[in-house]
Length: 289
Image 1 (cartoon, one colour):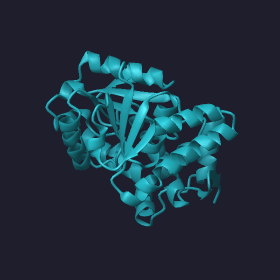
Image 2: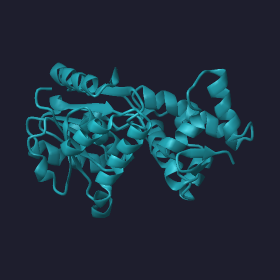
Image 3: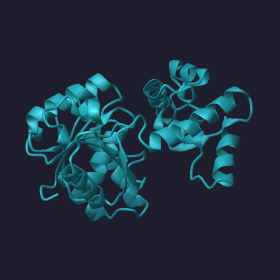
């Protein structure tokens, strides 16, 4: 990308992570969060992540300082004019995302428009614009700073040039890409969810506890993190919305959300962000129940 300017829409966990990685990689980065209270904490949250990385020796203090000068938190999307790439990272609500793409289409007529969605149709999002050939999925993984994978999702109308621009961007921020076509759950969410939902059913049926199920996959199959700990990090509410989307989109019973998942979300036990899910969370540390 010759124009190294990026706009990130959404200041939640994923948006903060994406913006932080982009600024560290040398991109002029603007991040927009609609909620004023959340926006007021956004810069400190991103810089706090950099400070932890400096303490762990993963990032130099100079790199973090320079990244801070490249990072802007904006109050109005009008301030984003000129960005070459826009990455939408708002909650998984189709109509809200389509409305965002409608606005971006008007503000950034030359930009590549990307979504960080983990399950929604890139084709549907592209349909909200006048240039679906410039719309693509760039799906990051949590925590963004640590996870090396990015899923590039090509919609029905996405052009080869847009795919190449996305791949160039992913390489520039030091990530590795896989390429998939637009289908419910893409590759990673579909596979990860299938394992996660089955693990939840095993807990529901009393086959084993969450920690033992996770250890089975970590020690027996070499997974870096078990499916239920992963669910806590992703968010049970996010997993529920993905399961509902896949169950509907693929018309498959195997993706029907277990009653346990629905109940935990209804009770507010959404994982790490709420302090409790399949584990209790003490900061970044999961505690077995």
